[in-house]
Image (cartoon, rainbow, N blue to C red; front, side, top):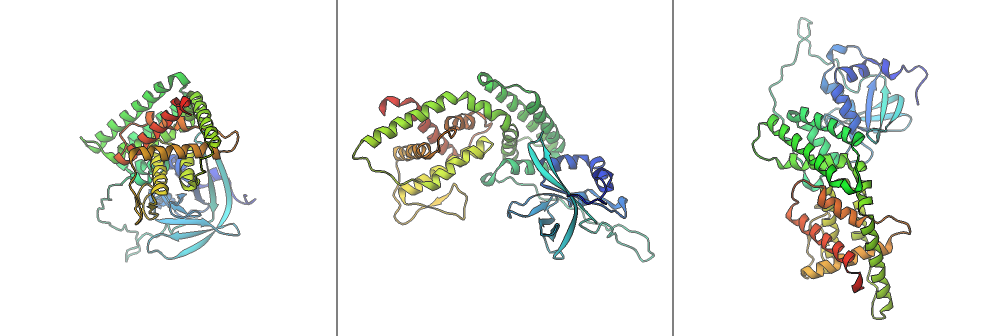
Length: 409
């Protein structure tokens, strides 16, 4: 998608400065950004600050599907028709403008297993020459009062691999420790050999990397006590970063148990079909859809949170409770006709849900419910919140029952 008169990317001054003077920022962009914008022409290279480069690096917007947010969280862009992008000021700016795309290069990073786009445009997105001029015509600097930004917060309710990266990267004080952690994880993914019988050796290695990162981070922060946000974010980031390497081995390690689980459930369903008094229960599609998300989640914490949500939806269907869409997926409010559920009823309801998942799965679909249980139990480095832990314990009990109770069916 390049114009014949558009110069090569490597020849553009903005790109050269980004990859040399701010190489750390460029490496971060390759890991997290969806769009890198490179202006073709620059009038004054000396005024280029880190903030200007951050204004040209964009990651996917957490709120809008088509929009992308700049690294410094000041601007937004989205693709328009006719090879243009729309550029927005996020807070009290001067509206929007349309910017023509001269060239677009889609990059597929085989090492990081992700892709992003590099857009070449005519001029910088923002005015980089807006330096205050004094009365005698000389250039002057605007003096800003010292500003201490608020400490970043990590929201456990919306925690994800992507969010954990953005949080850890936003804590400037621990930047050296985070850089070393990313390098160590890269080497782990590239060189470490994992065998099914020695999965826990790999787990010990990841625990060691995390402990070293936390120790370095607390030294840089001058902290003597644990920081729950950094503890949780580091766990999610480390397990998420290594997931594509570890997960196939986890599946292989638990393959026999998953097969036993499927066979036992099929026996149970066959026996129920032979019982003339057995009535078909309505499929709880919402809970099923939630449980299917386990296949797409990378960290043990996310998987456990998903199980908690699936249990909520199961209980909601059984007790006429209503999940509150305004809150997180793991919270619910009772309707006027709600009835309490005993612990054994919760187990029974969850057993029914697991069996529904198996019975409604397409032929040759890979079932990894035992693998999910194993990964969630082993690949977490800190305790779960009480409500999530209860749901995961229930899930473990259901899996164990369905694996070891074939003679009952």
